[in-house]
Length: 152
Image (cartoon, rainbow, N blue to C red; front, side, top):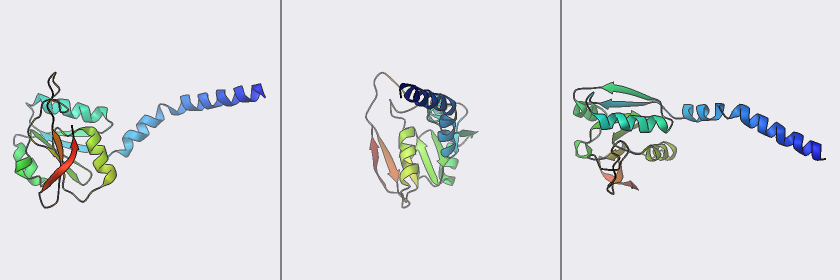
């Protein structure tokens, strides 16, 4: 009986070791590709892209001279403007939205235009600092009105 228990444990450990490299790749494939429209001169936008990649998103970066035009084309109202705009799935993202909020959006699938973190709040992803400020991620409805999606 002891040998069969040890054999079972060994088999489980071996199977786990074989699957471990595959599971993170599968999880990353489950997330849709994100396209980010940003200025080639904005360092915080690049850090936000890294935040998304570390969270498992595949990110395509499109550098643009006019982020406002990208925001307008994707239907994000100007009042929620930040330094970059992204599209993922059927949604638009504006600004330094945390990856966890994006994943929740994609999981819950609300009838909305997308998420926004207006401005560039200190402490948001890509804007890390020793003195973070409280900020909200806003859910932007199809009518352009907002509600609080998450508080940070």
